[in-house]
Every structure is written in structure tokens, then in C-alpha cells.
Amino acid sequence: MPAPRRAFDPRLLEGPIVTSLFLLAVPIMGTNLLQIAYQLIDAFWVGRLGAYAVASVSISMPVMFLMVSAGIGFAVAGTTLIAQYVGAGNRIMVDHVAAQTLLTIVTLSVVLGFIGFVGSPYLLGLMGTAPEVYANAVSFLRVSFVSLPFVFLYVMFQSLMRGTGEVTVPLYIVAGTVLLNFFIDPVLIFGMYGMPHLGVMGAAFSTLISQGVAAVIGLALLMSGRYGISMSWKSFKPDFAFIRRAFNLGYPASIEQSARGLGMTVMTFLITSFGTVTTASFGVGANVLNFVVIPAMGFSMATSTLVGQNIGAGNIARAERVARLAALITFSALSVVGIFCFVFAPDIVRLFVPGDTDVIREGAVFIRTVAWSFGFIGLQFALMGVLRASGNTFEAMLISLVAQWVIQFPLAFILSEHTRLHAHGLWWAFPVSNVATSIIAGVWFARGDWKKRRLVAHTELEAEELDVAERVQI
Image 1 (tube, rainbow, N blue to C red):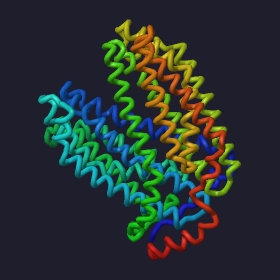
Image 2: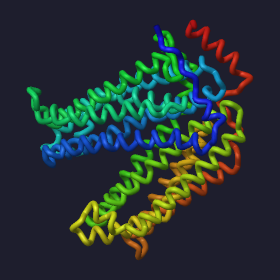
Image 3: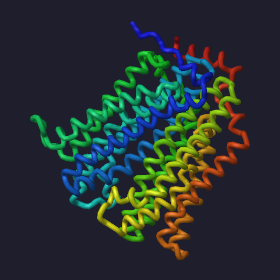
Image 4: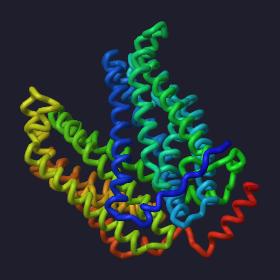
């Protein structure tokens, strides 16, 4: 007998806004931290195999990032649509969105996985992979492509749960799979307990197993109806009109993520041209930035859920209060973090490279140059979350592309190559880009156009619900 269907959390539409933000943001931040731990565990065990093994995994990472970016768009579309239909109280469309986005993203992942599996040797050849790294890199990349459907399915599960306001269950699942990965990584890599010695392939298979477990649990929960979404197998009958709508909503987010990854690669090439000390300093500073981005992303995703649900409920005034409070909280909190990092910059760098005075000095310069803009990182993430929640994904993409490709990279090139700042010019491009992006997003938010775009109109709800009911034969 199926489990009773859980009601959506009313606190997200009626309760204190600050409480609602933290109820969502804290578990999301925990999940993001655990995802980093997942990567660190793999890096720890693979590192025991030597430099060639590490290189064979590292060369695969940009490729997989671009593949996953292709699915991010449907995840954003799923979160936005689910949140607005939850706010509108339209359960049939909540279930329909969940089924159709899952169907689409899994189909896409199977196609991409097949192309990647077949094309891995040619792709690594084009990348100029060293002969001593090539064999392991091909094996690792191929297993990674096999695991792609599981990765996409679980990313979609997290997004759908986030749209309903349920963020603790994904946290528990990620915690469990991180623990599982920690134990099976060495077993498969080094051939413990009678298992064959698989080396780098062991890390790939460990990831495949862990992600497979997470995906199966996520799908089972979605089918069970325990967390606000209830699907049956007939829900997966393709609805091409909806799929086209989700694609139009989601493709800007895919382009944005792909361009972001490509932009950081280009910046890295520019940074490495200044030598080892500059590159190492950036590496340390990038680690600090990654930890700053985690709370910013957590509040951005929480903001998207709250704003989306309130827009769906027709409560635009509350949605605007959510946006303003989220922007204030993230700006204030990350400004405090920035002050801390500015004061203790040399000590922070020393934690990573305790014996290199040149890197400590230059790394501290980088952190202090960027730290004063940490609050603006939080501000822009919160406001971009509002744009996505209201369905303005194209506008969010434009802002991101302008920030990175029109402001950050050209400025880094000009300041570093054509002024006396040299490498320090690279560092200044980061805070200037952060402030400029915040200003652009703030102007867009203040214009109020986001309040006029609503993906769920109450006058259409009943007709849309009946139409979907007929198509899936409920």
C-alpha cells in the first residue's frame, strides 16, 4: 500500500521569512559541502597511486563538468516549475513536471553517455594527453560516462525536492553515499578483501556504485509520494509540448554553467603564464573562494525555492520581501567573512603552503584584494536566484556571460599585460567583476520586470490540470 502523500511545508508561504530561508539554506550548504568531501575522498585515494594516476583523473574533470552542465538547465527548469506549481497548489502539475523532467534528463544523459563512451579515446587524443596517462584516462572517462545517467538522475531528484521545499532528505542521501564511497574507494582501488586491484578504474567504479545507489533511492522516493511528489510509471509518457517548454526555460542555465567552466579555464591559462608562484597563489585563493561560494549558493537556491513558491501562490509582495532579506543576509554575512579573511590572509595561506614564503606573500595579496568583495558575491547570487525563480533564466545567463566574458577576463588581460600591476592585475579583475555583476543584477531586480513574469497563471491552472490528467490517463 503506498505511503500517504506528505503535505507541502506551509511555513515557506506563511511563516517568518528569515526562518524559512535558513530552514532551506543550511541543509543545501551541508549537501554542497558533502559534495566537496566526495571529490576530496577520491583525490585522497587516487593520490596514493602516484602522479600519473592523479593526472589521468584530473584531465577527465573538465570534460565531465561540461557534460553535467548540459543537464543543469533541466534541473533549474524543474526547480522553478515545481516551486511555482507547489505555490499554486497544483499537485497534478507538480507530479507531471517531475516525471517529464526526469524522463528528459535521463534520455539526454544516455545519449551523452553513449557518445562520450565511444568518443573518449578520440577526445583525449585531441587534448594531447600524454602517453603514460592515456590508458588510465580513457578507462576512467569511459566509466564516468557510464555513470552519467545516475549523476543526472540524482541531480534532478535534488532539484525537484528543493522545488517542493524538502532539502534534508537529499542531505542524508549524500551523507550516506559519501560514507559508502569512503569505504569502497580503497577496496576497489587497491584490491582489498579479495577484490581485484583496479587502480584508477577502482575510483571510477566506486563513484559509479555510490551514484547509482543515490539515484535509485531518489527515484524510489519520488515514486513513493512520501515527499510531496507522487509518480507512476505511466507518468513518464512523453509530453513533447512540456519538454519543449522546459528546454526553453532551461537551456540558458546550461549555457551559463558551460561558459562559466570555460571562462575559468581561460583565466587559468592567463594565470599560469605568470609562473609557479602566481599559479600556486591562485590555487590557494581559489580554495578560499570555493568555500565562500558554498553559503552564497545555499542562500541562492533557498531564495529560488521561496520566491518561486510565493510567485506561484500569487504572493508577489512576499516574494519581494524574501528577495530583499536574502540579499541583505548574504551580503552582510559574507562581508563579515571577507573582513576575517582580509585580516588573517597570511595565516590562511600558510595553512595550505606552510613553508613557501613567496606563495604566502602573494597568496595573501590575492585574498586581500578579493576579500572586500565577498559580500557582493552573496548579493549577486541571491538576486540571480530571484531571476531564475521567476523564469528569467535568459536574463540570468546574459548577466553571467557579461560578468565573465565582457568584464572579468578582458579586464584581467588588460591590467596584467598592459599596466604596472602585472599579476596583481589578475587579482583585481575578480572583485571588480563581483561588484559589477551585483550592480547589473540589482538594477534588473529594481526594475521589477521579474515580478511580471509568471510561469503559472491561476486562470490557466484548472484547464492545464485537466489537459495533463487526460494525457497521462489519471
